[in-house]
Amino acid sequence: MSTDAHRITVYSDIGCPWASLALHHLRRAAREEGVEPAVDHRAFPLELFNARPTPKHILDPEVAAVAEAEPALRWRPWSRPDAEYAVTTLLAMEAVQAAKHLDGYAASDQLDAALRHALYAESRCVSVHTEVVSVAARCPLVDAARLEDALRRGTHRADVFAQWEESRSPAVQGSPHLFLPDGSDVHNPGIAFTWPEDAPAPVITAYDPSVWNRLVKR
Image 1 (cartoon, rainbow, N blue to C red):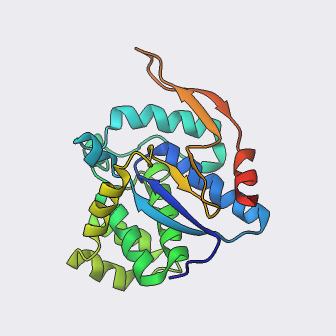
Image 2 (tube, one colour; image 1 turned 45 degrees about the vertical axis):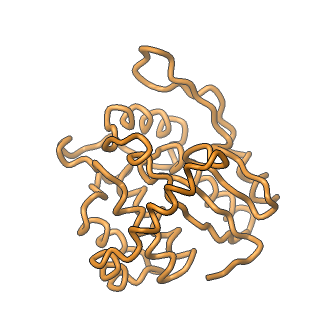
C-alpha cells in the first residue's frame, strides 16, 4: 500500500455520528482542494471501550443533531424495527480493514463511506454479514468476492482488536482523531457540542466546516 505524503490516519467508529460527519467533510474538502489523501482507517471500537452494544438511545439524538447541522449527509431517523438496529459495528470495521489490505486505501475509504451511509441514511443493519457484503458490492473499488472470503475466514478481525489496543493510548483522544502527514493531530475538528444534564439531545455550540479545507491544504 501507498505510504505517500498525503496519508491521513483516522481513528474512528462507524457507529459514531461525529466521526461520520468528520469524514464527510474530509472527503468534501479533499475534492474541493484537488487533493487525494490516502485515508488510513483505524478502528476505535466504542463497544469495546464501553463494554456495551451500540446505544441506540444515544445515537438517535446525536444523528438528528448532526443531520440538522449538515443536511448534505441525507441522514434519516432509523426506519426499521428497533430489534433490527446495528447492535455492533465490529464486522463493518473489520470489512474496512480487509478492503484496505486487499484493495488499498481508496477502496477501504469508499467502503467506509458506503457503510456509514447505509447505517445513517438507509437504516441498514451493518452488523449482519450479508448487509456488509451487499454494501461492498456497490463499491467499484472493492473486490466484494475477495472481501466476503476474508470476512468468512476472519482474517482481519485481529486488526480491529490490535487497533483497539493502539487507540487505548493517551495519544488517541476519541472518535474521530486524525493524525496528519506533517506530524500534527486533531480530535473532532470543526464542531463543538455539549450534552446538558437531563437534556434529550446534544447541543451543537460551534460548527465551522471550513476548518476542513484549511486542514486539507495543510
